[in-house]
Length: 229
Image (tube, rainbow, N blue to C red; front, side, top):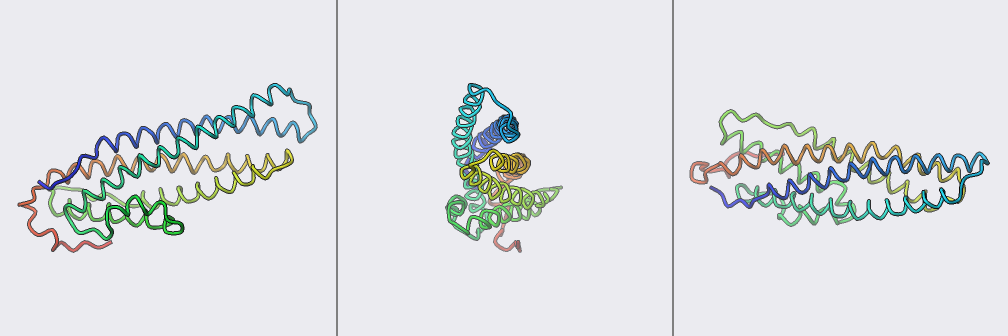
């Protein structure tokens, strides 16, 4: 057997945090709707209860802090799983990048807009090719989900960044309503992105398990297998 490191615990933790992120996204969504309704009343000149407005403001602030912390932790858990998966692949075939790039690529400006996706494609394609060659009756896993996940991730990131900047610069109720409306729309992409990420982790975890069943001495010359992306 190849010297592959355990990754099932990392995948399980990453999925758990992604699920928690989805739940908090939904809670944040309804909190934003409440704030939007309040701003709509202000914009229409309707008097609002100041105590209720203070409570809504406090809740929004707490949600923002909790959401930011959760996103950081969730991203960390995902990257830990991703890097370990790429390392395990490197123990079987030659990979295009050092395994450290599976983590580092997420933090380099511009590079992080495309490199993590390229590494995920490589991970998926090369694992598919290995298992197709070495595992009986293996059914190749389609890679379309990766492009869907990445598009949702990029749109969500850019959209939420714009919505946050608009909210911080808003001075009138109408401007707050505009920024909140964009934020509400972006939940569709952020939640969908998290669901796609869960699917990818679960599907690749099954592929990675099959990699652990390959015997090094019977896999002969994997380096001779034509692996292309």
